[in-house]
Length: 400
Image 1: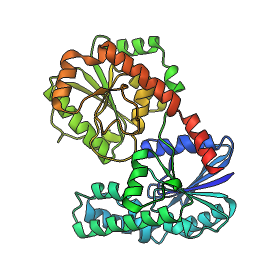
Image 2: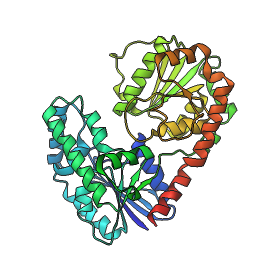
Image 3: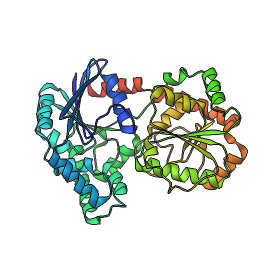
Image 4: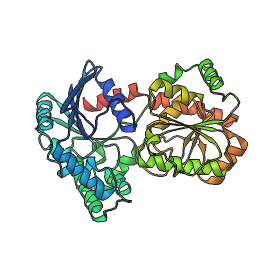
């Protein structure tokens, strides 16, 4: 198959959840099929940037025009938020380079995938009856944008953007031949909010490369902790980008840990470091802010922790970091919202309230036999249901 994928941001080098998902999924599809991934990217410095991630996975990243960039700056100033994706619906003019690359990709492709709904009017509107049209939904976007735009400075503009997102999402759901979701919860959301025929909805979940954690030996973990001076210390880990729900998650978690008297160490890994500043209250434990790290370092950091933190209060889909935690074999402290996307029970330590965290800290629950058993079950589930190789095989079967 020849698969053209359209998005509002570049997926390399794969720093946040959406980028990591798309890079893993389409890299694996490119083992058997040809994939061209095209984006209209506010961050792109060249008019058109081409790269080959794999022999059959071409990245075509196109820069926004000066006029569209100015439109973004105006909206950003009025909202105090990042509205690039929403502006792709009906506000941007798009560059001649982008539209030329779109037409070339559509002339070449058999399968057309739009990631998120924002480019659906532009891309699906150019498709022919020969194309298999796929809407890859990483959230119920109207719900996600309603939450995202809640603190906007300009309420009227925010409301118009929410309505534009809802119309665009409805269009993508109607026109697409197949709608991919990351979990049953999002599929149900589309049925409830838009009346989508469930037959059209296919779950392609987020995942992890479980084998990456097999490569982190006990000796490597022991050596790392010794050199870091953490051999006899309690260590937790939090993975997160600067995406709002991740920030909310860690702010709440660190508050609960501090109130519980936790005095160990927390590794914080990912672009969430970009929003950390002196306005955050001091805490009684040691925070190690690593920022974005490559996969090999991330695997060592996660596997070296005593417990992982998955207390989530907002957002959609299933967090990619959850599957890293599951694959690592590290006990996971999670609330009900944080465990969404994994139907089975018994694989995490339940923490819903500050009192739950206080009990967990006081007892060092992550060292108990029940935590060990939960961690083993989590890894088994990750290997069985959420390994990228099997996910890509299932996706390929949906497209055939």
